[in-house]
Length: 116
Image (cartoon, rainbow, N blue to C red; front, side, top):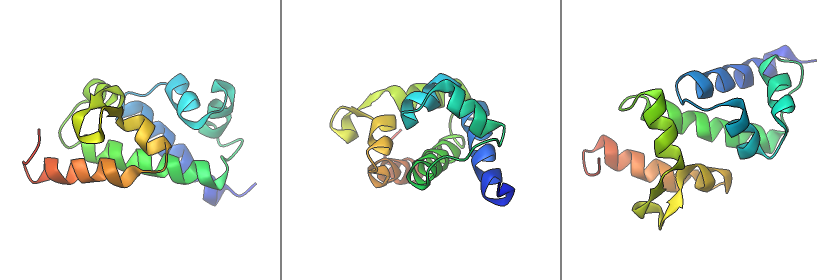
């Protein structure tokens, strides 16, 4: 087992839960795996597939950016809310569909005070 590769995933999962307000069930649904699998990832017993790691990394990046403005409950709500800037889609679904750049564009506008 390569613990060097697993450490970022464990940290990402902890941050998603603590800073993003996401629950193990949220992450399991987001990654299309069981809650038990997420638990094994969190404990460093298993590592997600590389595509899943990339998607988790994108979600982590979005959560970290949102944490500059919102608390964990607000971040979770923001991720699950439908956004007019995403044509009514939820940010969490857009990230899952590997279109994180659309969400990042919204965050860039938020940083520029163009959208709140």
